[in-house]
Length: 264
Picture 1 (cartoon, rainbow, N blue to C red):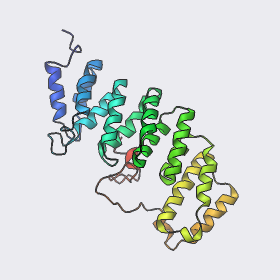
Picture 2 (picture 1 turned 60 degrees about the vertical axis):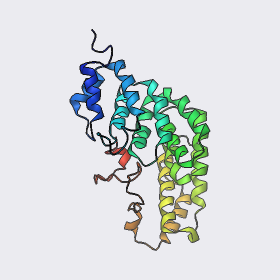
Picture 3 (picture 1 turned 180 degrees about the horizontal axis):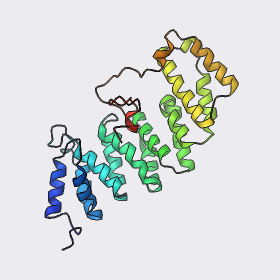
Picture 4 (picture 1 turned 120 degrees about the vertical axis):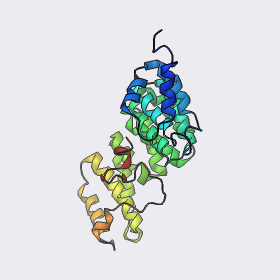
């Protein structure tokens, strides 16, 4: 019998072992599952959708579904896109499974476009919409509907969505970013506002290569008004949760965002 025909026998043992696996997935087990090819997809989807396996008090401490996301992505299993979006819908924005899905889904590229667009059109929660917009911006697909979705996200959450516009790379975003930057004035320059301003400026500079002189003068003037030392401007905001968000500094101390470091 072809060992890749179905996950039975020793192959079933591999998935039993996966269900017991904690944070670190052994290279040997990963290779063994990936070697099954398409036969590995159904049991991995079952694991992804298993709420009990996602519980922190489960044998794998919630990590098996996260490993399933990684393995399904490595297998380019297009049938995993809808279950990943469903898991994202059920989860919390800060949990590791949601973060992992947000990082992995863009690797499906164009085939994920329609499912994600459908999802973002129906969503009402601003945080969930922002996560979907981040995925859309990272797909590497140019589509007018993506631009429209990103524009809506920016109108709702300009600071959070500024980087998505920069990543997508459409220069129509520049007037939107400029509008928000110019909305800041001396009276609004709280510490949090300065943090928000920096996000908008970074996005503008990433997209345009720099600020035009008049806009740069406006930003410089605002930052000169701040009452905290320059060094404090560059520090991350204090954590408000014990969970690590994908845009938070990585706890490993690398200085990178968590989603670009240990989360990947």
